[in-house]
Length: 391
Length: 247
Image 1 (cartoon, chains in turn cyan, green):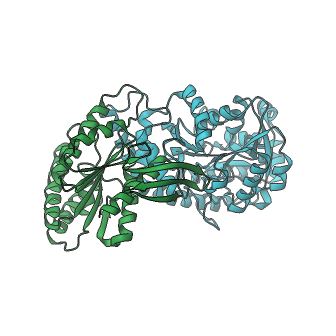
Image 2 (cartoon, chains in turn green, orange):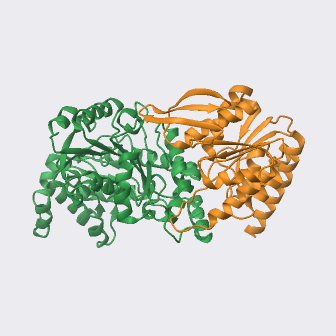
Image 3 (cartoon, helix red, strand yellow):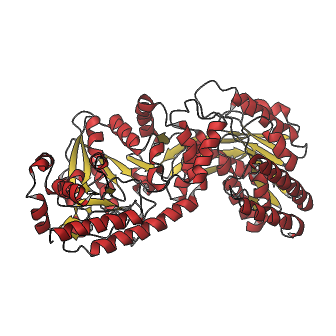
């Protein structure tokens, strides 16, 4: 959708999930220093520079997660490399990997690259997109090798609660599968009834849990391609062999930048949090004005909102397509067509819900990682578009 | 200009730090090495605070351990990072603290960060440690690293500077560190899991609760459980125990 949007002049994008900020200055300065000191030209150890892994372990410890920085932490080229390397290390051809539905679009290709089969587990929309444990258990087969999920979830902004996560952990033990917990949005929690809980805090499953964190979103570093995973040393050893074969090591300059992020960018992180909360409230206010078009659940976290499109509206916009859009309809259902109409007519880019899984159909994802001006402009354009259609 | 300012700040803080240490004469425990310094510092702080109370023992906040970080740690000030005005304020605060502050902890636990030749010499111009601890000498890179020999020389400088009345703790599991013992005029205590360690951990086991081991030092034995993973926590516990027994 971003690519398509880039070809149309005047489009405001709420599609791609990237922060609107530049990387904070202390991070950039540390990277420059590392370059000037000649530290970045050569490979680091495959799991990453020691200083960074040590600081990662210290930060994790502050969050009640305990890992040995020497044996259990691997710095990766973005979280998708961490996920792909893990899946390549763990899966045999035909193994099944459970993923929530809807969830992050790149999980499916990563599973397929590793020879696995993605199996969707529908989330309960009426229950704020929570896991339905019974539905999850129903989909477990002897071929199930892992559950891969994002907490908080993209695109719904759901925080999976401690009770649900413990139930998931029990299933993992009972049916002997691994859990990949991708927690890239954990620093952007806006309204939670309870403290954010990670399965990495649960010692009883540390031999089957792979914790993944990326610097991309928290520190506005998407282009630096830097993340890490933490897991039991036996798993780490297997994953490290794949990581080494894929990339040798994460970009060394980015490793120094990540070190600065953890040591020096706390203020920026807090600032981003406050800004995203403000933007979340803004996008919700604007959605409130479009009640005849969208029905939505206020996201607790991350920077996405995932509204359901009113059935009548969808019928009017998406099921009466002009010929030029037939190709898009073949690719998916009404949400594709709706998103394309918004893009081409209203000049607003969003992501069709079907991209996140079958349960995402009839929804679109809007990102409020973008500036307030962009959010306002996008909604002004959408309002005008819907007004013209007399909706 | 930027470089001149940095040098000025560095010099100014160094003078004040030397003055404040001369004034209060705290007992200094210095921790150096490639990794594990912060963990060791935290364990020592915990153990010594149990014995002497919170106010009597202070460590570097965060990992302030370089030519500017160390004085800030001793003067108990935050970094001004890249802000000229913040630094201006810090320099004034530093002067006031150095001259007028009456309260100062009796024990300082300080990380010494060393990256290149000469770093240790510079830090030791400011602080005269009573106890020196060296955790390890390790590399972050895969290519043959002559810089490890440079770091080893820096550690040797630290070992040599500890007086006869002081103590040096060396990791017996690190061959480079074992070899440094001969350069010490102070008492040397080696620690680790390998044979020959004066303070030794044996029967190390890991389970979901963490790690457990048998600790032996001065003919006394203790069964230890720590709820964390990684050998560096075992080392940190041993070091803190030994330091507590010395003080």
